[in-house]
Amino acid sequence: MRKVVSPVKIVLDNNASLTESPPVGCREEWIRVDGLKIRCWRAGAGPQLVLLHGLLGYSFSWRCAIPILAAQFEVFAPDLPGAGFSELSCHLDCRLSAAAERLRGFLDASGIESCALVGSSYGGATAVMFAATAPSRIRHLALVSPANPWSRIGRIRLALLRHRMIASLFPPIARGMRFLNPYFVRRMYGDASRISSETLRGYARPLARPGIFEHAVKIAGAWRADMREFQAALPRIRSIPTLLIWGSEDRVVDLASAALLEQSLPNSQLRVMDGVGHLPYEESPGEFCQVLTQFFYATAPDTLQREVT
Image 1 (cartoon, rainbow, N blue to C red):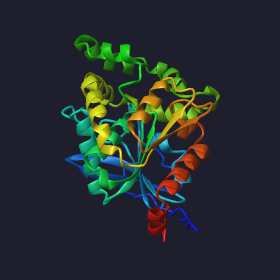
Image 2: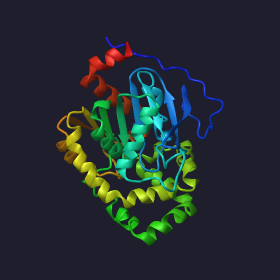
Image 3: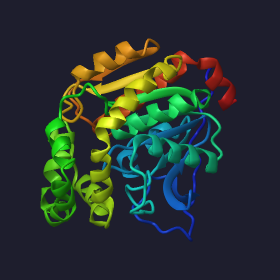
């Protein structure tokens, strides 16, 4: 019988710079990796679980899922460098392979030798790239509508952002038109009535920081080459138990691409959550966490049993 580990009550470090209130029972930590300070939300005890947000998201994206998952896992939700409230640098390498190497640095600095890795959207692509270089460190992989080369949605926008003039104009224009932020958040949801004012405020906060949009534009510039590398990396993660999760109403990453990705990963299974969009862990966190934990225990119950006892 599986032993369930209760969440650990954690007190915030008084010396930390609190940038967004963490969920109850969660603390904010700062970890230095390659000279950059990375912010992370951490909670719970048990097998280690790392959550990677998508492009222009941050640890805030996981605020609804962390308290549920922390009942059984030690959860880490970093702001990936160039996003959220982690330190920014105009010299940051924005290739997907570089993001994977920074993830390796974060895991090393956090003392995480192996973990279950969950990545959403661009974070999903980052998770794939890291897992391909260090498969022995990944017990399970869960990819939530990951960016992939088969998705047709957004191709025109990505092509435009590769234009030098458009790329230079986009960041100041985007900062000046922050009143459009609610529109883009609504596109992420299957049911916009689930969006709270807290959600809109939370996603808007880091976007005012200089460098956030510039970093996103650089990622768009590397997208074509990154997707070729992503596809080439898939054979190296074939042995890792992988769960693909999509929302049936996803308008950001093409649901049709899920079947092609599943075909490339013979040790994977696809779960489509009805009625939700690109962020199922926000729209339906209870169902999302249930799907996730059931997969973890079904694919490696003995490993997790040993770690929680």
